[in-house]
Image (cartoon, rainbow, N blue to C red; front, side, top):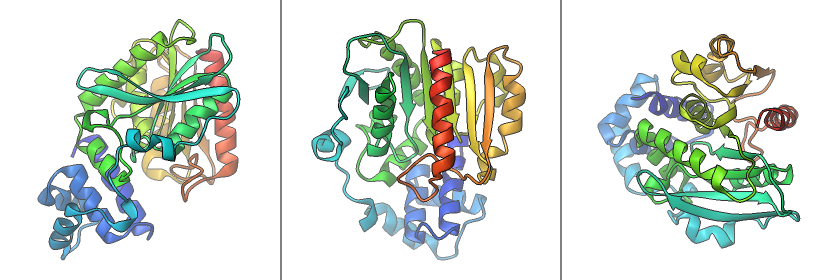
Length: 314
């Protein structure tokens, strides 16, 4: 397993152990992330979540999605039905442009009024670009930013309604490919009409938080980054970032938050502004108001701090 595959397997194993995911769905996700039945079983065993009778179940689960996962229609095909209309004062639309390996897809939200605004990349969770992430982009637009919600399933044709399939595509993707795609998004956004010159911000959640760290390390032109509860794969290189980084964690999310002290140490070496916020009583994915771990108080405070960070540093 690479670092993100292990991260995803551990996350879903936690959901299974907390009785928020069926065994069948856990096995299907493991198969999709790892690419084969034996690899999926080995990955679950490696995180202490193996079972004696899983082989037949994972083979069956890999063939068809469970009823809860839905169909596999692309987001682009369902945009008119699934996307909430933008609020007054902002505009929003799907976008695409040529990337390093495929057409890169996304969702762009911006203030309707003419002007120049800071640009922010928004990176989705492991379930792909969905309505929640699009809503976050619209929230940024309402606050005076041009926000591009990226789709890191672009090389697979774009995010599907089947969230497990999106997770599988993200887990099986080459990390270097997704980093290159993030560089392309970071190069595209400043060219959008109305985006302030001089650099952009990037934020992301869970899986996307990891790629917010990746972008802060690898991405020229990234002036500020706010990763929410993401793993920092290249923590030894974090001290090289040129971005002002605000790292956000939940105290109950011990698997990810165990990196917080090391992240703080590495950021202190950058010479750039930094902060690390750990929210007491908050768990993984506490910002997502459509999920079971939503923590309204922590989310509101983190949002206020994030907006202030980007207004100061982008």
